[in-house]
Every structure is written in C-alpha cells, then in structure tokens.
Image (cartoon, rainbow, N blue to C red; front, side, top):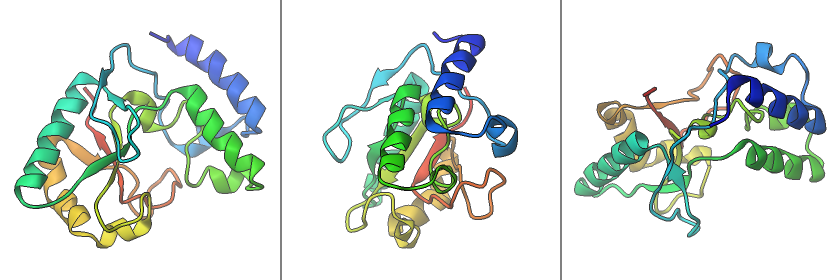
Length: 178
C-alpha cells in the first residue's frame, strides 16, 4: 500500500514530467486518491481488457449491472482502476499528439487525482453509443443510472458545472467512499 507521503513523492515526479502546474492540487479541487491495498478482478471490459475494483465497488457494480439488465438496460465497463503511472502515460500520449496540458486536464485528472486510482470509479458504456461520448447522456442506460445508481451507492462524479473543472462525463460513476 502506498502511503500519502510516498504517493506525494511519486506524484511530484510524474507531474513534473508532464508539465502539470505545481499548484494543481490546490486549484483542481479534487482529493488526492491513494491506490488501494486490495483490488479484485472484474469481468473483462468492452475491449476485452482485465479490469480491477475494490471488493465492495465490484460487488455493488455487479449488482447494479444485473439490476439494469433485468430491466433490459445494457451497461458494460470501459475502464475501472488505473494506477498513477497509467494516468501519466495516458496524459503523455495526449501531449505527444499535440494537445496542451490545460486542455488535457479538463478531461483527465492529473495522476493522483483521478477517482480511478481509488478502485471505486467506473467508466460505463452501452450498446449503440460511442465509448466515452457525451452522447451517453441521451441513452436509456444513462437515464436508468440517473434514476437508480444511488440505490447501489454510485454517484455521477462530473456533472455539468462541477467545481473541479472537469468536463461533463455522463459515463463516469463512482462508488461511495468505503
């Protein structure tokens, strides 16, 4: 398990390598997310990649997915746990494509501040909708989540106008703090 001090040391190095402003932690209004000690394997995601969540988040996700399926709503994983290095690499790839760090940080939290590091966040998709698209808001799956996810202790992390400045992400849901 990574301690807070260890995490801050690792993150300072990753942030510097990406050119993330030194005041990011104060300005983003996102909590530091320490990687959990225990993660379990989930089902494969839409792209047939292995995914992991905390045991409680996986149980809640499984129950929520089954309840949705019982109402003929298709939900599937696109992404779950991401480590700090994975988040760094994701941002570095976007920088190499010519995007600015300011633009990237509106759609991806800096390493250490993504809920995916907690092992409780899921990016979800549904049939007939492009992955990680704002159009997800117009699907039956999103409407079902908006009405039912709280019953499974999931919440929409980045609604429109959220204080973190992250763009609206109708596909990103997080299991409550354990």
